[in-house]
Length: 230
Image 1 (cartoon, rainbow, N blue to C red):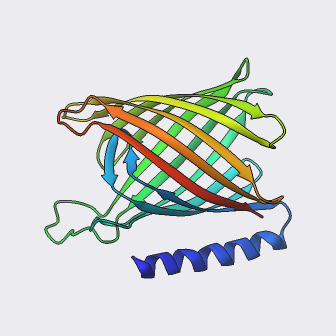
Image 2: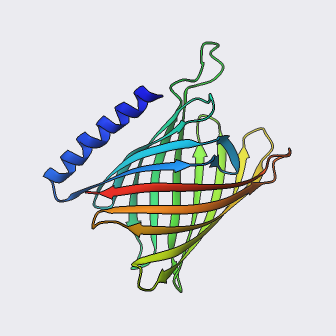
């Protein structure tokens, strides 16, 4: 895990230097700590470090995100993604892209599983009376799984602090080919603190739930992360 973190840090440094050479290119580096790693209503790990980098050019963005579990012997995850946004009007737009979920430590010796999956997506989002809203469809071509997810967001400025109280909610359905599907949702509150013109620290707390069978379907977890833009 340490070796993977060092590789990612080196990648972040090289990409941020390249971004400074061309003003049309933006770069964002983020390192987040999460008390739990929950994805689409399923807990994948306990305490997890999540470093990421994203490069933007106009309406195009591409990046890499990683989950590095700290407290349990769970395989690392590295996601590579790219997407393009197409404005419809001043408030609405369409997003098209894809993500590769890569698990470098996964045991594939038996040949029954792949160490990566590929998931394209398409979504539409906009703002209605100050509330951001969106609906996205994902299809994992490797796992043959369709996921539909809707989201809402609302921000309340905190007067005199330069910060805000951001509320978010999402609800989704996962439908695997030939298997039983399930529903999931997430509720979250976050507060971003700007510590400079380019750096922000964000603290959040989330509640996640799904209707999967079993006792462990309710999760409360917190995150704290620092984001730096170039």
